[in-house]
Image 1 (spheres, one colour):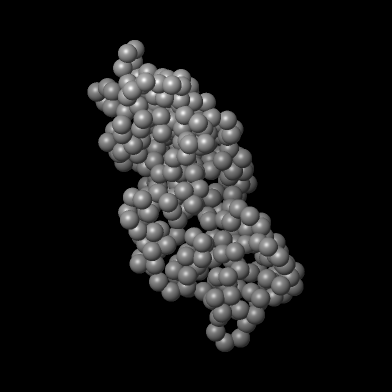
Image 2: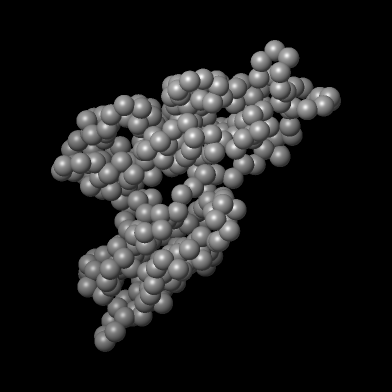
Length: 320
């Protein structure tokens, strides 16, 4: 690989070297999977920043007008729900109830249909309670929807996981961790239970030495051995911060000459593979960029081709 003019890390003594990089360059896009199903995802969309000029009274009255009389103004509903933060939507719900004496959810249930209705109602729910209900639904009765468990637990912050556990206990008088333990098994169970401890590093610092060591450990646990040692994957993917994971994924590519996503695809399968890949997700913008790169088609275009009507308009508005 030529001379190292900065610090270097080795896969083994005298073998390939990993040059130390400027941390600003360590931006690896998150890993993602298109569902292509046209169904609402288990993860509730939410805007991160407040809507400029937010007026709760105006929004409540606009929604009331949209549902009043003959016909429904779906465009007005989409405009408000897709452009408000989760907290702002909670305020709108309470204000609507205070002004009109009705629950906004019940009004929308009577006005909307299909996936558009499901998504609109999901947006009005408190994020942590919505997640708790989705998890309970995924484990209720015969069989378990592991995909929902993965999509929720592998994408939440420590604070969110703690809040979801509390909401689950409050809503169902049951322990989320106990239910996950009872409804899953093997390596997937181990990584989900590890995530439920809410102990993932969430700092902003990037340790380049650690990234190099983790990349080596992942190689040794996967491609560098017969069979895959999943404990090493658990330790790295479930414990490191998202920024640290980006550094590790880039280190892996430099060290091994292969994308981390490709390595996970080759070394794991089934629900465990989904969990590992989902743990690499970072944010919506990153997901859209990775989707474009992998499928040569924007996520918005995929949504437009796989959905229709007001449901399509709401999803596209959320993506923007």
